[in-house]
Length: 425
Ligand SMILES: *Cc1c(COP(=O)(O)O)cnc(C)c1O
Image (tube, rainbow, N blue to C red; front, side, top):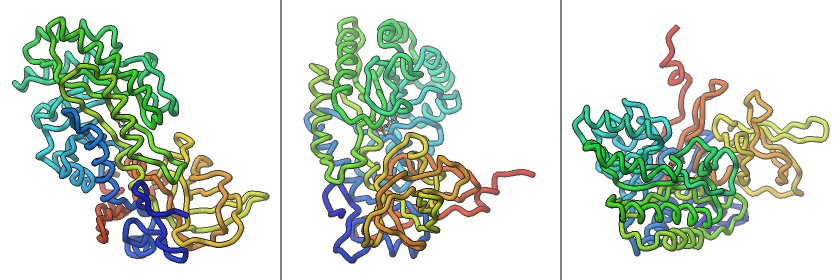
């Protein structure tokens, strides 16, 4: 049974009550807004943000929320109001930040391996804090655009520190064979060459070694390599103002009693130890850790069917709403919104999309379910809605943000008319 803990906003207030997000019943939200429905706890996001703030209090820092984890305007606005900066990876994400929180433009770091000239121009005009540059070719393009627009560009080289992070191979990024970053051994020469270009200003050095990394050790190892390089550059006359440790701190998708505060402290200590005597600003880019556990995907059971020995629970949410299980074999806890009794049975929980990969759980033990029951897929606040699609021409889910006792629709359910609007025939 889920109890209310500081790291879990979704809980049953009593044995016969419906699952709540904070003080708000998910049954009520499903009735008012329909399903599938993403529900997020603003309080939980704020609490997670505060954990990073207090763990890093001893050092000049900026927490740049990785917009790609969940780019809802209301969530960006909430985080900006808490003082967050943003890590963006596209012109679209820049527009989102400028719309939700124009005052935060100067707290934006622009990452990504394939920035276009148009995206670079937009970010220069918006006066973002820094470009995390991923190749020499990109640095040359950045210098050219800066000259054209007449604004110096602050940049950090995103280094590939060649450290191994134990995570899913699709979300590991910090080794030489990955497409990300610049070989750290080549960095000094690139900084030196850039120092001769008046349109470029070397601002910092950055890394991002991957996502859903549970141990603090690889973060420490990566930052140790970066801070060594930064000290060396300083001795050679290039003083950088910032070290960006990237994002990637993982959560526990299985453990209901996961201690988020302990995790953040351990992470901050690993960074601190690795920074040595660096006295500039530390940037971090957490995405998942801030929003994953704040969100659940609420879905209704459409059918329970048997094929031979297997029982399938067919829900009205599908892989187009939450692709993580199909894409990374990711685990999400699934709980009934109203507790069920009866002996747990082994079932597959699947969506209606015409793909065998359209599942949320395989061989999962759940108490008996019936058509019409509501289920909550937990820890769906990151890379859930953000990776949703219209596959099978399914409209995207609605989203609700819960703050204290109040719930507010932050994105209405998409209609088929919305989907057809961009098409010509
Ligand atoms: C994806 C990404 C992040 C955020 O990763 P999380 O695992 O969600 O914390 C941060 N920085 C960069 C450059 C990224 O690509």
